[in-house]
Image (spheres, rainbow over the protein chains, first blue to last red):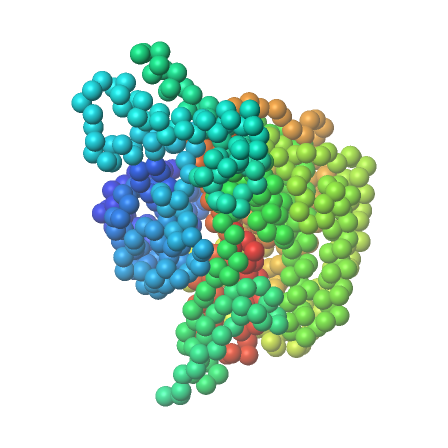
Length: 209
Length: 359
């Protein structure tokens, strides 16, 4: 099975207009989803008409406000409250606004950029974003920024190496990023891929030196 | 103007042992406003993709809900398979269809029982659970699990069903069909059931569409909306007919589910007749890199599994949009204007699954 799915990139200020047009054309609101990217939140508005699936997509920076579409699709209020409560994206003028009480979670906005742990390519990107966000761009060679980006990753390497030598100490540093209640097995499996990534840039920089 | 009172429904209520709360604002006996609240047992399953790799995660998808467990794992697998471009063997697709339809039956029969219990028909509750037991036995014999099947995997299914067993299942379904017909006649003919459900909790076709209703709730209002028409799994080879009723009330929703039971039996019979020989799973390499919205028709309606991978063994994002979540706005619409005494019936015929909603 491969259903044709259209993903349309739009600008944030076009949203309500396009959604109203879809409403007039007889589309059904299927869902509103949000994805945490290393530097932004990506919102997906899915619509369906006669089994044709369309997606409106745009990204917002943390702290940016998004207009509500509840004036057009009244049923959107649950999705919008969900995105507000779990991701911390500010959505303005929701028809039924729970003001953060739809989801009672131990951690406020558990899906926000600060709380999500990125893996793989996204992790590398997240690390790259952090120094840039600080605004400290060293005027040196690119190698300098590389080592900076590699540092946090390299810190992650140590515990994995130690783990090989002394197994007892390994879970402690690895669990730093994770929640305290995690199984050690899960923590270990997480430590390994980050370690593997951490090694790559470090080797590269040492070779250039 | 009558005095307004606020009456809470749930999170603990005799007819619905699931934690959803509605604050019902009433004037005399009429509801003028309803405000839902959820998140009594929010589990945050979506973020577990950070801890489990994409193959293991099938088991977590399986555990989102007990009644539609198999369809959650199937939807998740379909999404990952699409992202990775895996061709699932035909036999596996047929087996998935058979298990999915059995899950639908098991959910709908269970619903018939709890529904009847709420209208005061306790013996139907017992009989419905006896029929459900026969379906659960089929699950146990073919998969090893009774509720959480754990039989779906990325690239196919874990277990094959032998042809003799398949024929045996069809034979047993004929017996189940006979038993189902017996309890269905009560729903069709009993005066008190009709009296309590007809004309209660009405939602029009237009409202159902704009409020985003899915599943039996949409079909009871005359909307021909059934994701099986997309032709996922083996549905493209079978004659799938959405069970549509035009009543839009609680009674129509009952009829849709009863008719779907019989249709499921028919679909399983068709699938057993057409199932080809061959392997039930394929091997694959690599990690998912891409995104897909997989849409599957569950007992309660369309479920969406959104999967996004970035070439890593852990997915970057997994999202489930469950049918109950999208039916809540319509529930509010139905509740407003109805009598307080009808609320349990209305909520039950909408068949909310809070376990799914609190993923």
